[in-house]
Image (cartoon, rainbow, N blue to C red; front, side):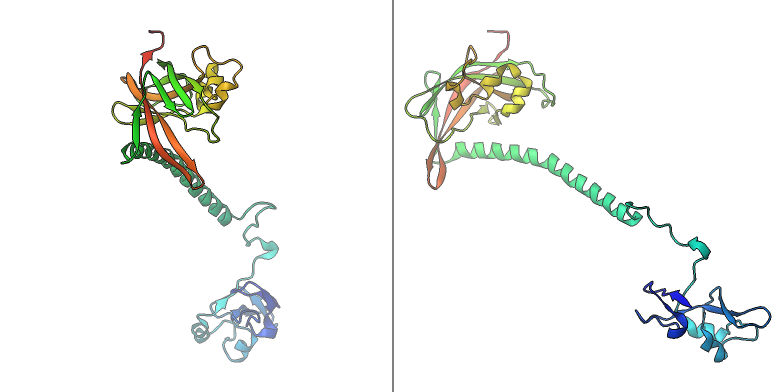
Length: 300
């Protein structure tokens, strides 16, 4: 009679191996009862002992085929085997084709939840860190011992070979999809740009804003600004080289920048960085500040 090992689950001939699994060496046992009418021994429901025929020959069974108490005590610690009911009704239902086992599904669900939590944490942490790093870098640039902070003269900021002049600075209505910080509004700065000399190989950095309270604000991204102010699309994307290639520049300026500022702000410094370039990289030489005052759109 073949049985399934209770330890490794593999099948083997019970009588030939005397209940010892040839695959893992574990002992397996079944119970034996006397058939009605004095017949031979036959397998039945297992007991604690569940010994094979040689147990009966050794006197482990009484006249009724019941295992003796001594055999039960001696057999404790051995694995017992309970054959499944006919038709496999007692077996656990196998997962359908293509369906993952419950334990694996739970692990996948847990992994998905953990991945979502990690991505959410990165989404919440990274933007403030990037903004803080920009403010720190801008503040450090202004505090470098040998760094020259130049004040623009005659309303023009000169960062060779470009000359920037503010055509207009106004607080404009905001209709974007993302919410602004509390007590904030949007400032639009229109610049007129001219160039003298040959065009440099490197694109100059975009200007940023230094407010009266000492904080710094960088311009909204080109595509973000374009989605909110589509009428200025060409001017938004025209810094600084493309200003000379525009077929229809704006009436008042060559390029436009948008900043998020406090509602009570009415003045700031527009900062232009001047770098020197070499084979070893770039080095900040000076920052030119161009003072600007704001107005509300619709007012002079």
